[in-house]
Amino acid sequence: MSTPRHNLTSLALRKLCIVCMGGTGSVATFAFTLALILATVVSANAGNLEVTVKNQNGVVTPNATVIRYTSSWGYLDEKITNQYGKVTWLNITAGEYKLEAYYNGEYWINGSATVPSSGTAYVTLQRNEPFAYQFAVFNANTNEEVTNGTVLSGTPLRYEVRVRNSSPVDRNARVKFWVDRSQTSPYDFYQTSSYQSVSKNDGTRTFTFNHTPTPSGTYYRRLEVETYVNNKDVKTDSWAWGVAYRINNCPNPPSNPSPTDGVTNVSLDADLDWSCSDPDGDVLYYTVYFEKNDPSPDNIIKNDQTGSYVNLGTLEFDTWYYWYVVAYDHTWVCNQQ
Image (tube, rainbow, N blue to C red):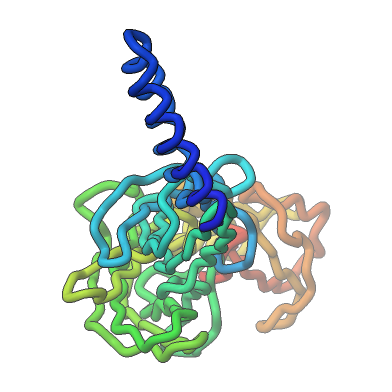
């Protein structure tokens, strides 16, 4: 490119001499020629930059923010990625630029680009700062996973948040964790972990929290990952509210049996009847065991059905009958009589 630029300059000097001899129109002609020379020089030192932002799975990400800095991290400007996850700068000064990508307020990655003269630099920024990739809930007594399941009130639970660091340097990260039924403050549970080191190049770390929920209902979880970057706490990931599990109370024990226990002289066409309720207002289902002359009946005459009664038909005279009821709410099997 240097040779054409020298020829233009020589041409301009010759033109200038002609202008100097040309009389009253010379000033306008000189200005036009000088502008042409400057535009040509600037264009020769400019190039383009195209940046594509991808998430941790390599999927292009629309609506991400790309910030452009000088080579010494002086802020220049920022743009939002289009539907293809791309932003473009045209006719910017050739040279090195520093870049950062953010999404939804989360810091994802930094990088750099060298823009060539009269060319285009193509750069992909794929998320690599620490992010949560898995969440699970466990019964702390049995280690059984109960994520999205139903748990008996008062069961100790352990929450696990697994964090991955795909950046090329070790990072110190921590997790802010919320659990709540209404998804509003005050929360049923909130805790911030201590900072823990997460190794570079896809290293992982599990953050644990312990909680024993009692009130019934559906519990939701939310979390944020903060990473210590350049002496600051920076949010590098966040999960919106999502279902974690459901807390359930057992039905109350069935009561008020009819006929009553040990009664005699019962009608031969008597029915079985009882009362039962559920603290959570759940629909109740019953299994009824009934057998003659057997104190431990195992004959089922009503199986997993609603309604707190059974029509027995005609009973036999002078016979002892034994029965008991198991109450369910289709989330937890508990009391029986």
